[in-house]
Amino acid sequence: MSAFVLLLARWGVPQGLRKPLAYVGAALAAIALLGLLWAIWLHFHDKVVIERHETVIAREIDRATTAADAAANANDARRRIDDARAAILTEEALRHAEQDHPVEVRAPAGPGARAVADSLRTRTPAPGAAAGR
Image 1 (spheres, rainbow, N blue to C red):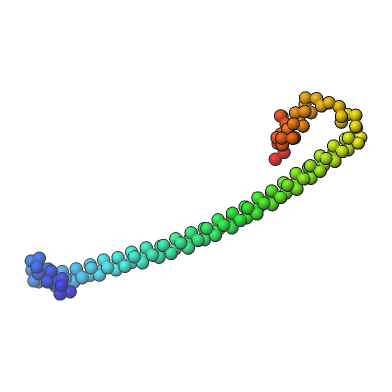
Image 2: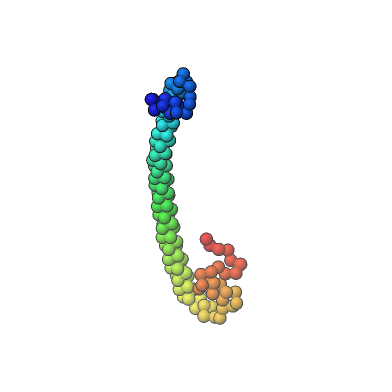
């Protein structure tokens, strides 16, 4: 406090105003110090809150990603099973056709049948055919 009074005396403040101005200056300095301390506390508090929030969000993203991966793996397995079933059914149908209609099976294919067979070989839908998936 006396440092403020001496500073005010150096600046030429009249003696009657030095002490009240020193109190006001000390109060303003204390308020400024408290404001600075509060700002520092708030900065670090906000950092902690943000880190907690980001951790929760990252955990939720990991859970969602894991669930999506599991669903994708299950869908892939289901598709492989469906493809294997379709291949077995196709082979059975071919065997059945060869047994029941051996002459017709060995006859040359027309352009439409050739296009369908070519599309099946390359696993692309035949022109004009609807996609299965």
